[in-house]
Length: 143
Image (cartoon, rainbow, N blue to C red; front, side, top):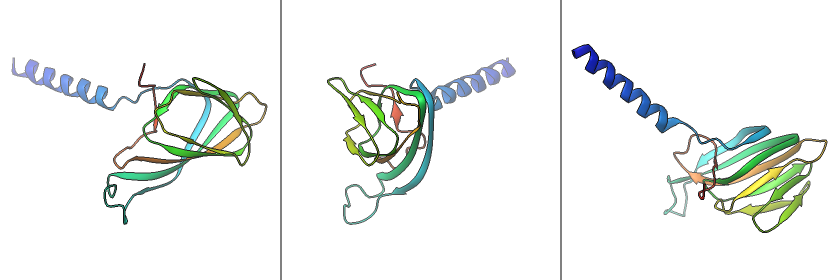
């Protein structure tokens, strides 16, 4: 009986931990991401010190690739460094090219496509919770 209860407790802990750490999956194809810089904020804006961090991530979207409908944990600026990205919002579609940048609040559903025959490279400059370990990419809140 003791072994049964111990085995059950271990199994419940494993299941609970597994579900708690399971990352949310957004449908992607041909996407590679690399965090280039990350630093917890500290300075004169004492309300945000040690609560948020700045992260810069380089994203490469291969030809024919996409990032399905998603949101982000925090806001930020995006800068396309090469290629052309088709950016689909609920009310419009925009084509961004090299040197163009835009702001994302994080809470607007959007989808990204590379409809060209060359990779799209862009940088994400984001403000995120200091304790966030994984990607900022999340399924839309409405889903």
